Structures are given as C-alpha cells and as structure tokens.
Image 1 (spheres, rainbow, N blue to C red):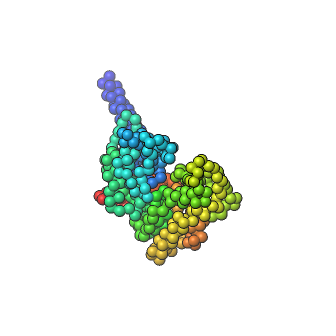
Image 2: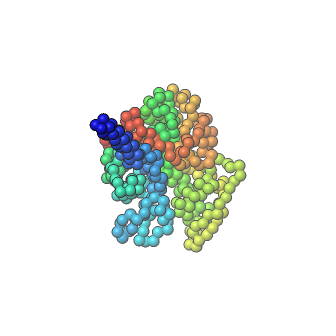
Image 3: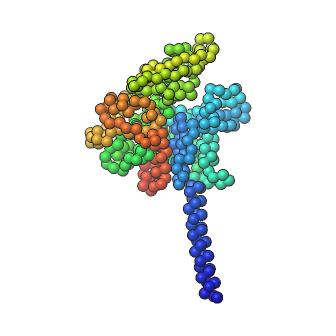
Length: 364
C-alpha cells in the first residue's frame, strides 16, 4: 500500500511538472517581454518574439480636435486622411523617418503595443527599435523616450540598414562587404556593412513620400488637378515605374480642379508618371553612386561579386533594380518580402540578443 501511494505521488509530481512546463511554453509564446518595432514614416510593423510579425499598420493617427484624444490609429485612421471634418484631424506623426509630433507618436506606439498584447494581460516589453542611420542624437533620444513612455521596460535602438541586412538573411559578421539600400517612406538608407558595423553610409530624406509629392505636383502642373497623398500613392503603386513597361498603362484619377474648384476626372499614363518620378529617383541613384565612391576598394570588390540588396517599400517600384543596376554596373536584387526586412531583422536580433548586442544602442 505504501509503495503504491509513493509511486502514485511520484507519478502526480511528474505529471504536474510536465503540465507546468507545457503551460510555461505555451504561455511564453503568447506573452513575450521582447518586441521589435520598425517605426516607419509610412508604415509601422511590430514583431513579438515567439509569434513573428503581429502588426502592420499605417503610421497615421486620427485626433479629436476638441478633446485632443486619439480616436483611431493605423489603417482606420489612414482612411480618414483628407476626409475629416473640422472636429477630427488625421495626421502622420512621423516625417522623414523621425518624430514630428512627440506626444501623438507616443500615444500611437502605446496603442499599437496594447493591440498586440494578450487581452487582459499586460507585460512591459523589452523593445528593439529600428531607426534611420542618419538621424541626430536629439532625434534618436526622441524615439527612445517615446517608446519608453509608451510602456517599454527597456529600449534598444538599431540602425535600419543593419536591421534590413539581418532581415534579408545577410551575414553581417563576415569581413566581406554587403551593400544594402533601404527605401522607406521618409528616408533612403544606403550602407556598406562588414564585421557587424556600417563601414560607409548615406542617409537621404528622399524616398516614397517625395515620390508621392512629385506625382501630386505633376497632376497640378499638367492638369490643374489637386490630389491628396493617398491618391498619389495609389497612382504610384498602380502605374508607377522607372523604366519603360512592355505595355504602358493608364488609370483614371479623380481630384479637384485647381481653377474651377469642381471635381474632375483625368486619365494619366505610366510614361508621364515615370517622367514625374525622375527627380526623386535621380537623387536616390546619385546617393548610391556617392556611397560606392566612398567604399574601400576591398569591400567594393565584394560588392561586385555579391551585388546590391534592395529593401523597403520603395524597392517594389517597377524597374528600380534594373535602373540602379544599369547606372552602377552592378547586380541588384530585391530582398524577399522587402517591406518586412527591417522588422524581421529586429526579430532575429531578439532571438539571439547576445550575438547582436554590440550593434545596439542603449544610452543616447
């Protein structure tokens, strides 16, 4: 009898131990202290360790102008851009890769973090945030403070080109050079990476937003048609290109006549949009050439062998890899899931924090 009781007790203890281990494993997958954020000018992406990418939302906030309270974030707020009454204001709190409105950005990040937490439970996460390599110390501090005040327990920053390279699957620890071009909404980051550091870099505040502005300006000059940012971005995605298409395309664009003030529809073709994009695309290519001119000869040799990796939303513009390749004489390829490269990089950093700790900035 005693032997049976002891045996039963041991069995129960073993079962309880296995149950606790299983619960811990399951619980850990859903409640993580580690979060990676790509706080982009156009889009914010969040990675939670053990769960992957859990949020992809436009970096847009809608505010009640009377109470100054946020009434919508992300995609819901983006739908309000250019459509709000006087009592509501839809804004983009990030400009050129940096914070334009500190308080609103903080509230937006808090809302996004709350959105990805398990309902009814809140754990202050350790956060890795990707930031443009060319931002100032003051701008870097603003990002860190915003994320910290939004509920993070600890905040680490990583340069976007490094995160993009890691997310694209490049071995940044190698002494061999890798060149990455990350074209986002507000900035284009160009970097040559070797030995877990950026050897040379150029960060310009010309990217997707400037392309949209160029399209808006073209519509105004060519057709006296006023269109908003959302429409300009739609045109870029639908028929935008930087090299001739096999079959040129066209779309009907709706806006307001700048002279008569009445609604109007015009037909726009891909060739004229290509011409409109020449200035911002030309500036990006000039920056790429300048970065190559500054690259040490041995690393330049590696880039000839390996080519250039394109990341970011701008990498999806039709013909861009071909044009950059033609202008530089190098092989250019788009990373797999270019929009997600940076946030995937923060995820890989979280998965092996010790390995990548030396590329992170904590005290700014």
